[in-house]
Image 1 (cartoon, rainbow, N blue to C red):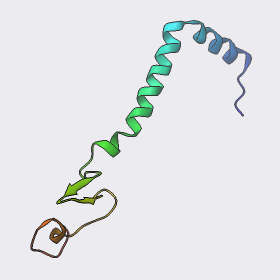
Image 2 (image 1 turned 90 degrees about the horizontal axis):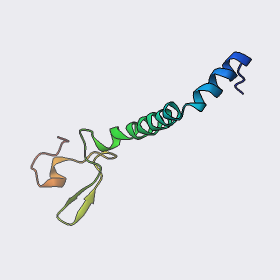
Image 3 (image 1 turned 90 degrees about the vertical axis):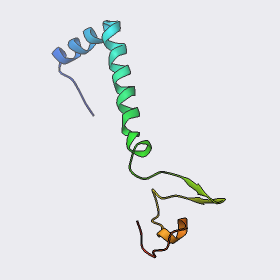
Image 4 (image 1 turned 180 degrees about the vertical axis):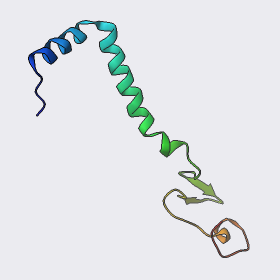
Length: 76
């Protein structure tokens, strides 16, 4: 458990008293939390692909080129 010294407690209370700083901290933490999921959204493999009525998940499983109408039996 984290315990602060008396000086640290006073500093923390003074920081919490400043509304702009307090809300800025929460905004920063929320944006940081959202940025952790950015790798799932913006990467080199799509999360979901529908091709000719079938659903594929390339981010989680590797498919050969033949699965998408290609001629070669290996992965692109």
